[in-house]
Image 1 (spheres, rainbow, N blue to C red):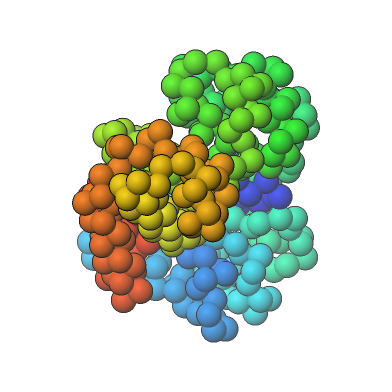
Image 2: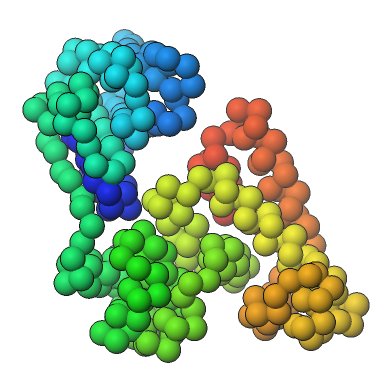
Amino acid sequence: MLHFLSGEDTFRVRVREDEFVDAFRKHSPLGERLVLDAEENESAPGSFSRALRESLQAGLFALPRVILLRQTGALSEESAKAVRDILKESFEGSDLLIIATHRGKIKRTQTLVAWLLKKAECESFDPLSPRELAIEAKALLKKIDARGSIEPAALSQLVANVGTDTGKIFQELTKLAHFKDGKPITQDDVKELTNEPLESNVFLALDALVQGRRGAAISLLRQEERMSVPIQKTLGLCAWQLRRLIEIQELFLSGTREAGAIARELKSSPYPIQKVLPHLSRFEMPRLKRGMALLAELDLAIKTGRVEPGVALDLFLWKF
């Protein structure tokens, strides 16, 4: 089976990709998932097509596979032709699912695109109209929390605050849903909690972890992957947030307990510190330091190739 997903709404492209992968895993729980990203794997001319050919080589005991070909628009014309030729030979395998994605508008004259448009099941994800966006936002909220609801004024406020990017809306809805815990999201909630930086989500995830709510933490951090935020950046923000919590905790224990005074010491804005202080008692210093040591260990494992970034994030979520 061959699918081609494209469009400017890259978040919805990734969600659709996830739906195909989830269906594949239900059908073939022992199957393999392979990812080739043209922006990462095309380090030298032809390296992407060589990696694809190696991925398609079936051994004697080969398992069903899903192969994700991401950002195919980044391929040169020569590489695109090579990928097209390889796919011609392989995509009809009954145990093989290939999903090619293209960020942004497609060029129909590009060799690989032209072939995919003829041979693949194609879906395009263009920006949504205001009405479509409202429907999509409500559907996203139900996926995050089946109990969740949002008032119409709050939804309008959310679009006004973060724009029509469905990825950003999903990010903010996840934060709001975990904050409200099944209660309706109001316009005041949106005004207070949206437009905060990514590190705000990371703090919420860490807070969920120390409370034993791993599901909430996983949801908050995994959304960044769907938004194409590199996992290494998410791990880096975890390290940054843990360092900041250690600094705040040290100042608090030494007697500096006002947000403004702590902010002056750390040369920071008092607003995020003010939001952290009520939760500080949950972040015990030994656990924070163990978390930093764990992230340092995982960072080395990623850089030396012993652990994939996604696996490192999972390990942090389960070990912290």
